[in-house]
Length: 468
Image (cartoon, rainbow, N blue to C red; front, side, top):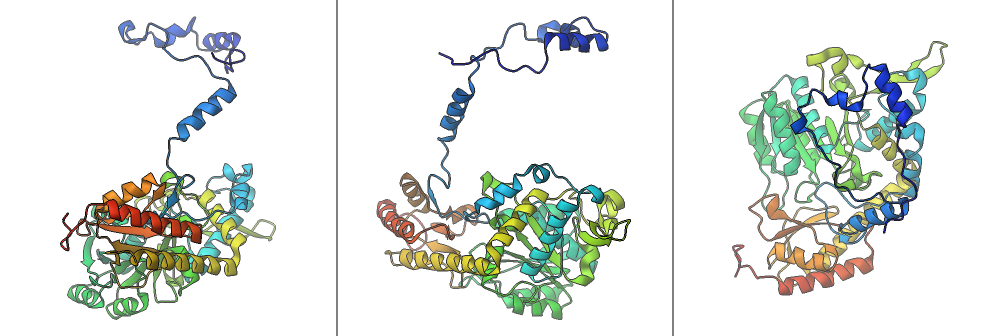
């Protein structure tokens, strides 16, 4: 029995419909559809359930949502580029204010100083985090930032070739391939050391020695969770006249030197970890930063300081000759918008946690990940797959079938990580595991016990990776 009260809200009263029909010279609504053959029109009322009251609808939607398995219902060890970080309540509180929530690109600075201030602060904060003086006010996400930066390097060097580490996230590599294929840019892979998981300097040296390259594109931590040593790679690139283009995980930068300090010419990141919920995959937040001399090649919006008509300090979009609405096909980028609301969240997040808090969060991520890794590697047959140092994500080789282990863990309300064979078929029976500050020691101990049960029940595999 429905508890609906009244007939519900209808935006058009009968007299409103009559006025609209009169205005367009029609006698009935049916005349609007006269051009559609009668046999194609629905000649009956739609078979819909009766209307629901607000409380019935709320209950119905919550029941549907309860079928979802989320990070609110399960302990999550999922990573792979998007991580279950804590978002302080103040971030959503400020970001949901009406003057921000409905904002768009502030082409009219006289009425957009608030949002321009936020975007300017974003550029300063992310530039400082990445260690490079010029940052844009965002692009769509980390993958498009990486691809845009690769094209930027080709434009700077006027060379249609890039060296790309084989260890960047496969999904991001797919975006990069799409960008470069359409622009006639050749991608030359750079191999990783099979034991450490690090980009092999000798492989990079050989690649750059064969033919001039615009840049090396490398990611840290990489798809194995291994933290790359950027400085020696940047030195090799510099010796061969190539730029160093680094995609990094912002949370790592509370513990290690920034890409700019390590010699990167261009740095990008996915800033989801800076105050953005996982949101089933988006919207996320891409960032690109570079050195002063390459600013005019930088894609995306740039907010700069200027004077208003009264000579007072103000902010406005600057250097717009780089952008599509001015330069058309010669623009530095064809991303025609930015992630202003997501950038606002990052500004509020970084301002809330502060530099000291950010470093503590980075340390917590690393400590908890290493604790779990040590505990899991104490289980029979479980081993760390790569010897390179890791931050908060690591690759495990298992003695049992990875898919079976994940199913068992999910039955215990644990997302146990990513079956790595889905990223690289060569790594059968491997799990990529990520840990953030949100996991407590008690939860990590519970996860270890659940892993032990899951492994004991999983089909065993031999040394070659086949089921025994």
